[in-house]
Length: 206
Image 1 (tube, one colour):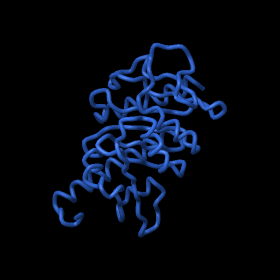
Image 2: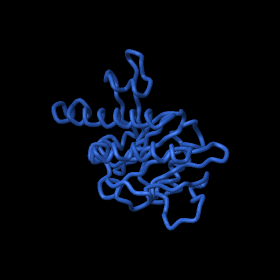
Image 3: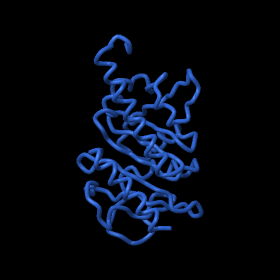
Image 4: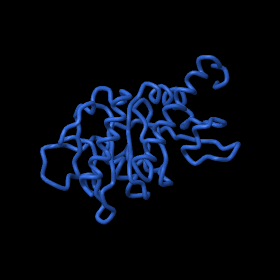
């Protein structure tokens, strides 16, 4: 089980790194290993995620602390993943910093959310109705991680979802790695789409 989960997360990391979504060692990934006790693999802090090494991830507990003795440090945002697994049945969560998601979070930050309607890719979030609206919340980028985790936790209501942190990045989660990656890809597509619209129809969003 441990080896399977490790490999699954490493494969996701490899795929996202090919998209160049890990600038400057940014971003972090997690995958659940067990519910009782809650344990999950999370990326080690400060690692070059373009490379695949035996020290890419470490196993942590329900408090985000390492299960085994190690010189590795869990990612700074590990507590965000803790909140996801504590409140839902999600099995995988991904956090990346891209130019598109940072710009979107700033453009719509004062509104506290960015919304999408009529775009095909909102179906990745199980929005199938013709007039369905997808709302992705945008929260303040608190430097104090427990405060950030608390604000983030207020927007975790389902087993899949996404939250933007203003000028920081996006965190998504799903019931498994495939679903989490699908939500991340859909989100990044929607952000780029919205930014293209802003270029051509700026008054539409004022």
